[in-house]
Length: 230
Length: 230
DNA sequence: AATTATTCAATTGTTGACAATCTTAAAAAT
DNA sequence: ATTTTTAAGATTGTCAACAATTGAATAATT
Image 1: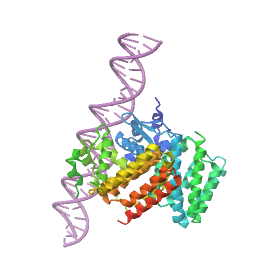
Image 2 (image 1 turned 180 degrees about the vertical axis):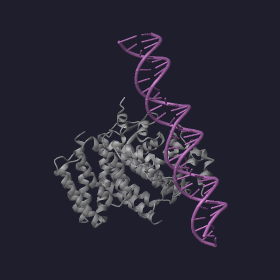
Image 3 (image 1 turned 60 degrees about the vertical axis):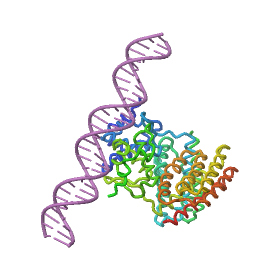
């Protein structure tokens, strides 16, 4: 047995802040998401209902609802009468994931180039400057770096003003991407930042075709980089 | 009040076949999906937990899990302490939906052109012939027509061999599309069939660029047609 | 008459217990 | 020693009851 969760269970409060206003089931969703995105739970790890319930001080009912929700987007995999595990992405799935990201995020970049406000565009540049500043520090971690990288993509998705793209790309695929990032550090450092700057420039100029093309290329490069580790 | 569900509740068995092998929560998912795709539940209609539970002869626990799952893809909308309703797509959402479908299904058409087997390609043509046959019958309903139309898109999605595109487009967006179809009959009859034939030809020839472009155009036309009704 | 309290019914949120199923490990048989 | 059987142990699936919240109808107040 592998009671990974039980070891964590004791000091939950120290692990993350939980919004007690939320429904128990939403608290459970947040907790499981956090456990995965911080690498405390990895691909194939069992997610025990009772353990999660104990961590939150609730019963299993809400936890089951949470697991059901996360399984509906394949972050967890549920088997009847057996339980649920964290999804294990293989090479093929990663190719599929990046194909979808390429299609949807280049759409998002195109929309962002059309729709982003002056303020948002300025904020985009600020975020890149901040990211660059982070990288110059001696103690910048791969984890932070991956976070800053993803933040850029979220800003583009936000600027696209498309709720559906946001949910699919930002939330659903984002969860799986967080899982990948927690396991393998999936950023290409300086080069990724450079490509982000090109994309931001195209978005700022309202050059939608270029923005879309650059985003597609960026995501393909990102995929190739990740596939090397498989 | 609007006890739409309670009237249905009595004769559930006659409404649809339910697979009793499945988990109760999956049975509930199937039931709710069916109620929506057949138009028995429409946008804004309340989905009462106890009613669904009564229809299936179960308790509310599994029903809550089902609602949670369907709400995670926005087919249902959940409000804390108030309940859940069927999602009400507005004009803006429909634009978003079709933008996403255009991006993902043209990707699917491209992949299908590369990957579909001879058998699958033949089956594609058969499906179109069958569809054409249906249309010539005097009693072909708009409902059947919409089903046959969607079947073609599913065949393409299947041929793309991309599990993620399948889940997002075929399942998630498919659910919402089924809701739209049940409310407004969303097919353009003869013209849609013709465009399907063009796409199928491109796929059969392995002409991926053309297949993708034709699919994108087809979906844009489909969107414009639907938007007229809003 | 209009507005505010107050009660009551309906619905959701949560729980703890029980039943069904699977897993593991010990015991029995070959 | 290897396999099979059996029996506990742990985990999931389901339920029925209770608590909390909301919505609506009634009563009370101005």
